[in-house]
Image (cartoon, rainbow, N blue to C red):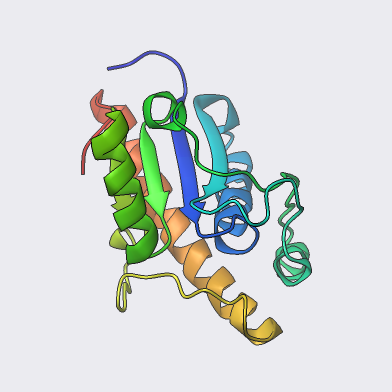
Length: 168
């Protein structure tokens, strides 16, 4: 097993809605379980449209209502992410496909997953993009992320307990 914290990167399209919310939810779960020191968590987008911007105000608001803080600025997935992270966790198939293409080009030690692979109620296995909708879409996404991130953390903790880092 690799030493050091387990490193997880959540990825969506622009890194202002789904992936920063997933990052915030996951960090909140880590704090609640006193596991923060065992993880490094970040988020990024496959596109560069919002680099440097804060999260969408609707994502920030739904997070605040649930006691979750969103602190990071949007960034684009970069070459070092493919070796610096153990898990690259995509919000939808498009993101996963783009990560897979980049992985083939750059090489990667990280495992690629759709977040909803871990969801006990996976639906179509995609986290819907709430960007073009109203605030209710962000609440729906929060519920999906809370459930999926809890299951992901349970899975990764099981891997850590078993002495392995990667895999599903």
